[in-house]
Image 1 (spheres, one colour):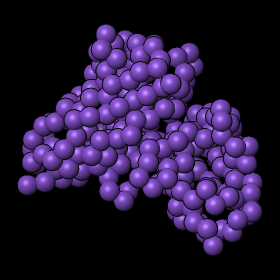
Image 2 (cartoon, chains in turn red, brown):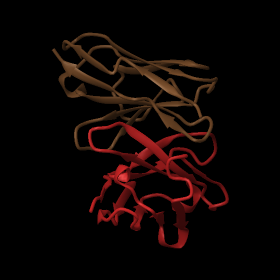
Image 3 (tube, one colour):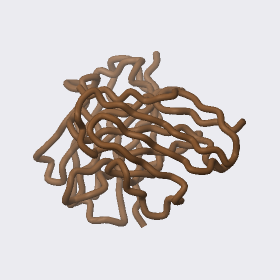
Length: 121
Length: 107
């Protein structure tokens, strides 16, 4: 069974940092591209970043480029999102998700349950 | 960046109704659109991939169509458990983007 479990969320002050983790199981992690998506309270989904299986290709949304860094450790079946210079508008539930195919262009299929990040003084 | 204009933003329909949601991309994105269902407090669930392919285990009353810039998502006969917010998502060109969402309610 495919599972993705995020952790690391919590309350952080403005301009602070936080590192989110996503531990996966049930599939060969190193073969799959991964993505992070967030959802502010009462708002829609916002795509944040993408990382290839080998970490050779990485993309970011304009809203987080230069502040957030995505990485992965295939030996630990883990995906990370390092978030720096946090602002109030970064408050959201953060989801990690697997990209559906290892062969062709695809979007996310399996998602974690999300972890809440609250940026407030 | 590619904008995904989704409409309507909300929709009220009766059980058994046919429901249609549209997404228009600001440029050609070929077939690279997914449709997701998100119930309150839950993670999104993939329903349709590559514009028209039904994800395994998803009821056949859900369907999708389109290519290029215009995409349609349809529920052929609305059921009470379909109450949720639905999103389109393009993955043709980064930064990948979502539509604004359509909140579906039962009359």
